[in-house]
Image (cartoon, rainbow, N blue to C red; front, side):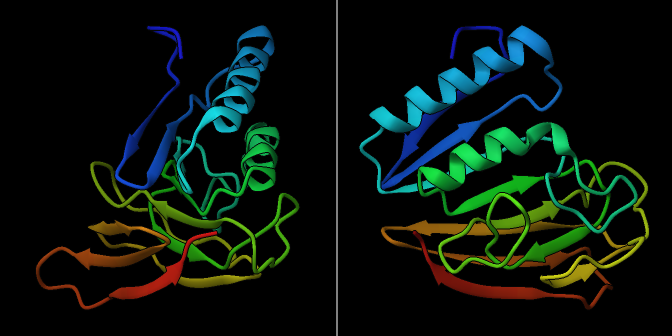
Length: 171
C-alpha cells in the first residue's frame, strides 16, 4: 500500500502476508479494501496470512469487531488461510470460518493473540467454534509457515501450563 496508510503486503517463501489497518473509516477504509482486492488478485503466492489489530471474531471483552467484515469476506473469497488479531487480551484459536462466522472447511482460521503487553482480559462468553482459549495468561504464538501447510504452537510465560499446538493444510 501507499506509504503511511497503515496497510501493506509482502511475500515470505510461498506465503503472502497482508497487514491491514483496522482503525480506518470512510474513504480510507474503502481505499484499503480496494487495495486489498487488487493485491490479492495479483499475488502469485499460494498461501495467504492476514493480520490486523481488532478481532473480527473473538470471545473476549471487546467481542466481534464488525468493522473488518468486508476485509474478512474479501480474504475468504480469495482463499486466505490465516488471520492473526489482538485487541482482546487473551488467546483463542477458532475453527476455519466463513465471513458470517460459520464453520467452513475452506474458511479462515482465526487466532486472537492479545497475550502480551497489557493486563489479560477474561473471556466473556466462548464463541461457537472456538477450539482453544485461555485468559489470564501471557505468552506468544509461534507459527511455522511451509508450502501448503502451517503449524502453530502457543507458548505461555514460565510457570503457566496452557498450551495449544497443531497443524493444518493451507487453503
